[in-house]
Figure 1 (cartoon, rainbow, N blue to C red):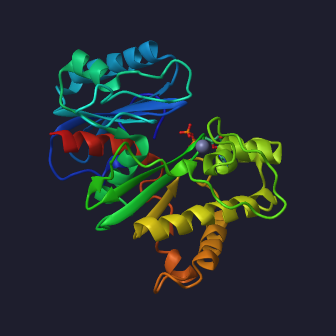
Figure 2 (figure 1 turned 45 degrees about the vertical axis):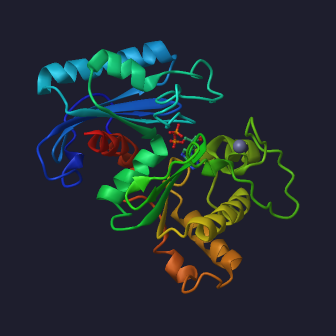
Length: 312
Ligand code: ADP
Ligand code: ZN
């Protein structure tokens, strides 16, 4: 996504055929992206740092209001948020951020805030469910009855689409907090404040930084930490193949965006763990299952738009 505001023609060909106006907000732990689209065109998008809730939601709302004055009233607003979030409409915490460790954001009523300010229908889900939905609608998961989108960035999260709908139950999947087997001799304690060495605690950007002693982006591709991380991610991939039987697992987020070689190692290790048990799925077939998202870094913001579509 481009920074700042401006027409972003990059959406051409990605969005739906029709000419309706929709707005979206992807709220991430470090940044938020708001956008407004008409039919196939992203009319404008803007990026904001995620600060304190009242101030952050206020400036996003101001921008949406300015776009509304310029382009007209959207049919609906989609909000794709970092989690955990409340998704059960019968509960008082519907539309809220719930047990996040992010200071100040616990209990923030996102849907209530924007409903009060704009009075629009609102589609709401996790950022990763939104991205999964966008990939299912416009990207690499088109036509897949079961598809998973995982982001590996500041944290690790995963959204699951089953028959075109995000999988919800008691709450929503929290794939980033699965516990995986470690490689021999690895005693890194992990950085997850809840679980220590869960997947997020071992393989998120901050975990990689702590393990390698340098910023994640600076770690060379041949650094030994990648072998451990590829093996840990393969544990998670194998678990997901065995529990949910996905046709795609799309891996997005900053950590893997420029790491296709590591992704190939993840596939190879996943094939070893499955050991031929899932019929017809070896390393070659996994290349068509464990893939980068087709929408790239637009999966998140377009996820918010995909959620807006579902509300109306
Ligand atoms: P967010 O999770 O906040 O939405 P990103 O998905 O961009 O943001 O992830 C940010 C994290 O990814 C940071 O911890 C950063 O160090 C790490 N990161 C960014 N680029 C790379 C890279 N090329 N290789 C490894 N880690 C990276
Ligand atoms: Zn955890």
